Image (cartoon, rainbow, N blue to C red; front, top):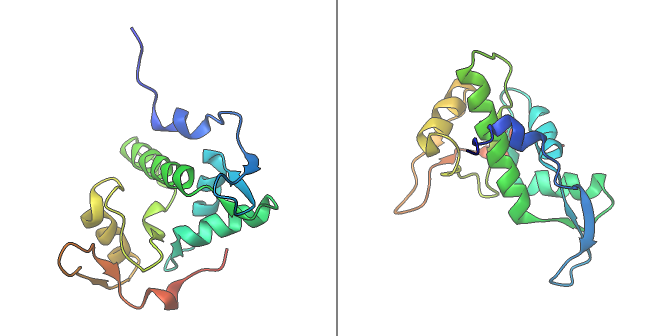
Length: 152
C-alpha cells in the first residue's frame, strides 16, 4: 500500500528542476523553478513586510537569467511551501516559512492557502497589517499593501 507523501517530502523533491525552457507562448526563456527555490525566497520576507507572487516570479527569473518564471508551477510550489509550514507548525516547530506574507499582485489574499483567506488575514493582523473585506466575490486584501512591499 502506498503512503501519502508529507508536504516536506513534496517540498524537497526537485523533479529535475530547476530548468530553463523556451516559453510555449514565445515570450522568451522560461524558468521552471524547484520547490525549495520558491520556499527560500518566501523565507526572506521580514516581519511586517509583504511580497507579491509577481515579485517572486520576477526574482526567480532574474536569478536564473530567464525572461519569466512559470506561473503555474510557482503557484503550486508556493502552496506546497505554505502546507509544509503548517505541517511544521503542527509538529511544534517555531520557525516556519512565513507564507502568509505572500499576496497577489493587487494586494488580495490567497484562498488556496491553508485555512483560506481567514487564516491568512489572522496571520497578517499579527504582523500589524490592516485587512479590507473584499467586495462581492473578491477576496479580502491588505490595506495600503504597496507601503509594505519588500524588495527581493
